Length: 215
Image 1 (tube, rainbow, N blue to C red):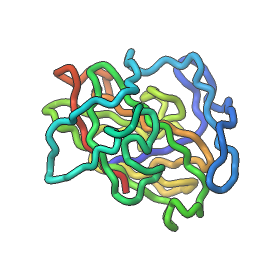
Image 2 (cartoon, rainbow, N blue to C red):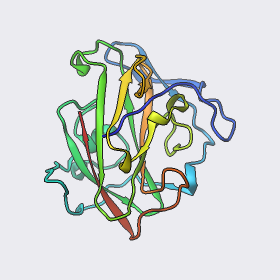
Image 3 (spheres, rainbow, N blue to C red):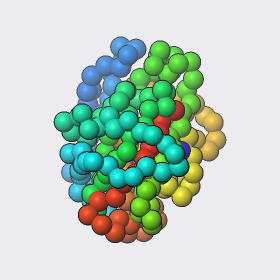
């Protein structure tokens, strides 16, 4: 499972992520800020993948996943993969094929604590499996698409790989060992088959498959 943390940080390029432009309104009616990511280069020389690939590869661990993204014209929003808006507490999942040398960035808005979509809990988890041997999957909650080096609030809890088990996040909290997300903010769920430390490409073929579940 995977979870993450978020706040204001400086990118490697020196661009402050504190520069925001309103991009809409959350369920609570508050403006949803979005970091100004103009000129921000994706980590490790990766290129963004925006088109779903299919059919996906074999499933693992007995999990059956509904491929919500197969009916989506693009692969750019959280709901394109999970079938519903963040945090997708229904336990929805999807199987995802990511091209070698590319990343997927799924945008989502956090809303506010107490919003009905959170179901009375400000915690959540994401579970991720890589289905090709040695094709480690690194994921990060960040304020810009493709940014694996500057996770939210610079926290290691917001940047993890498949070998590290469960990832936990919390909305506007202070629980240790969780990725803290700010309210009414736009984030990206970034995914790529790269080594979480070196950034080395870990996908041995043209594309590699992963499975994820959100709760």
